[in-house]
Image (cartoon, rainbow, N blue to C red; front, side, top):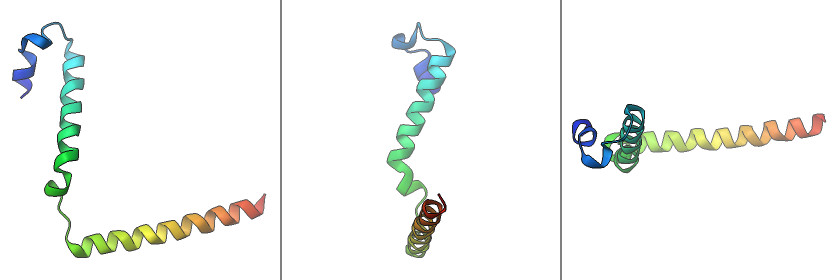
Length: 71
């Protein structure tokens, strides 16, 4: 893919940095589309993640509440 972009006429006047940035952007875009398939989680992992997310939310409210009363 990199060679195809580097030698394509549309990229003829691009700097190496511009091409590298374009390739990085392309990689990020592709991975956002493939993330769930590439890094598939089990149902147990999803439940654990949700439990942790809930606990983080509770802690954020607690910390926010205690910081607000200390002022």
